[in-house]
Image (cartoon, rainbow, N blue to C red; front, side, top):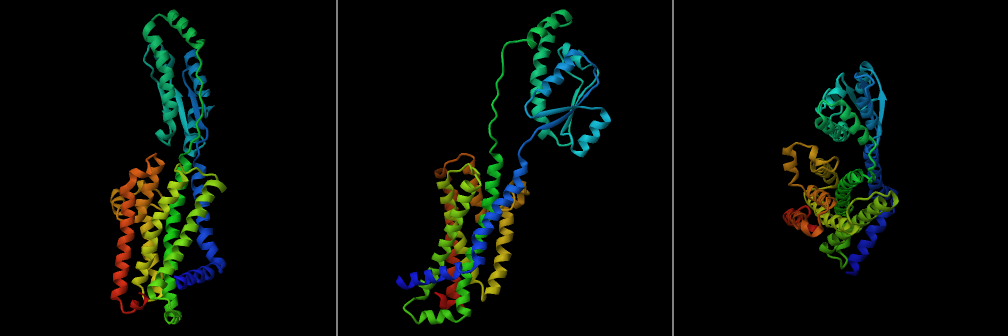
Length: 382
């Protein structure tokens, strides 16, 4: 045990003596967080810019409807003409256009609102809010028209009372945390990739010791080959724990991003992924004869699997076939666990996801051990 701990201390000193190690293990995850902020930081909702085209003249109902839209939260209106509206919507200066065609006020008086168009080049994403509130407002006014039918005086009297009604609607804006969840998802995705790369890099130290002929000298001491491999695994785990803790602390306290998941659950889930990354690193080492081969394998395996699993962008935007393929990747199950925790599910209800991660770690480890035992070139390691 003392000999193994000596190897652990030696590897840690050798690793963190290099400035590049600090950048790779801690600088890159922080850079990934900043990149996620850059990607999703501009996704916060601002004001909707609505162009209004009034072709119904100065009728009271039309003007009141325009004032209603103008009074909506986060909506700014611009009175315009048809040519300018089409040009500004196409250029993105306006999010949508509201067109009051001739006869709009009369249709509302008749109890059947018509001749009102809401157009946009961005689809329902920007029109749904205004459309929903307009439908409610016009529905109330149209109900007056249906009740009074063709009696204009009765309509005007009831409508005047409706406008002067004493009830008030108070609204309170809630903080939109969706973008912070997206930032967390993206940051965790990048972190998984860095954990996998760091695990392989630490496993490559086994190959480095053999190439430098240091391994044979170590075996002349009381240290066993298995003890040397376990020491490398322990060092990799320590470094990954530090990576995870530093990333989560910066994410929560330094930058102030609320992941929507209790820090304890998030930390525990990521620590469960660490054995998966380490076992995959051992597996890649077992199939490599030298460090160049290991580097080539890690690039060939880690980057494409992270891409398919959704580490770089949400998996929901990928085709169904790709999503089915991602189910065979451990990164997918970790990200799926994070997503379900953000949706409010308890960690105890995600036993299947956690069991699958453990199964990946077990399978990778068993295959690595078998490969080591059957490979004459690396049998000396165990």
